[in-house]
Image (cartoon, rainbow, N blue to C red; front, side, top):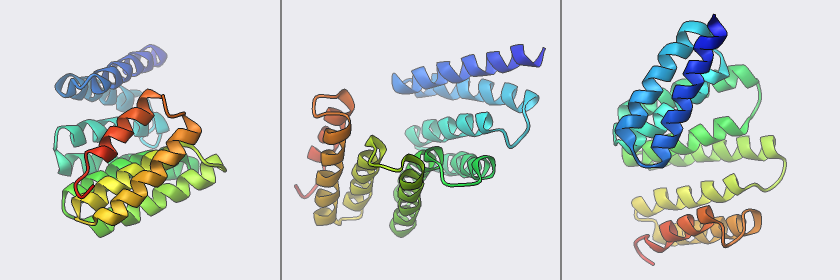
Length: 189
């Protein structure tokens, strides 16, 4: 029964997400590999469920510093999302934020910033209003700028991102506090 196989794939995906969030990247990598194997066996290659798994795989590879593999998984996820949605969508933006971080770590600051511009467009169109992901994007943009030695721009983007996170999630939210720590840890402060 394909629905049972798909359910197994979704369970592996959830296990991968949980392991990723717990910082257990090797476990997460094994789990997402299992999820993708099952999903690819039972779903059309352009199904967005596969894109979700590829996006998670890209995030895991990024965490493991396997940048070429992260780029490949994220590129595939973005391509599937674009075909599946046929318009800007926040899931494209989320994958692009990770792709921008990968490109930054590969020394490609300009490419990373262009990717973030497209991610912002996807958020703008998809949400139609200010969302916490806009704040997250700005903090990640600041991380990229800081890595490139552009500290004044990084500080400005961190401040703007933190304002958005404060307005959307609230200043006491765990994610807001974790992003504040990212900003506080940047060079040139």
